[in-house]
Image 1 (cartoon, helix red, strand yellow):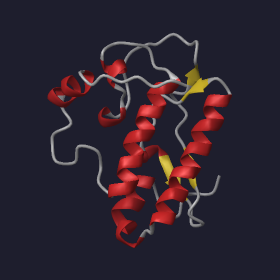
Image 2: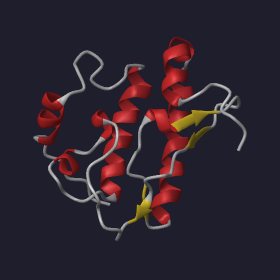
Image 3: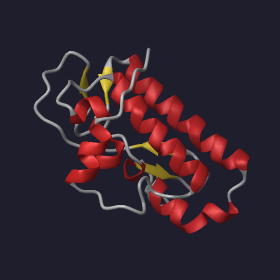
Image 4: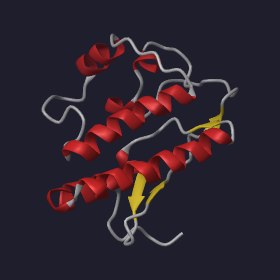
Length: 142
């Protein structure tokens, strides 16, 4: 695959957010939904779904990258990993990764694309944040 001219999605938002129209933002979300949909259709879970693992090509198409932690839905969980703000609360509580965990990460990415801000940009990404996030009640029906 050709190298992402605009870098990661996070880098792109840092650099160009102010010039993005709502149509550009919606297009980015659409490409991400299509990508995660293809991953999920194959019975897989990405498990490390965040804006740093997406590249923005010169033609504004977003590609999901870094499938190193991607596993089948029925694969044994071997711990909690990922970038803290994007890790689903139930995973932080010790539950298995599911496709819904990826959808939680997508919600955080959607916030980023709409606001231009990294998640929880104004607080430390530490144990306190992990504990607070783990207390969030989520229920996503797939």
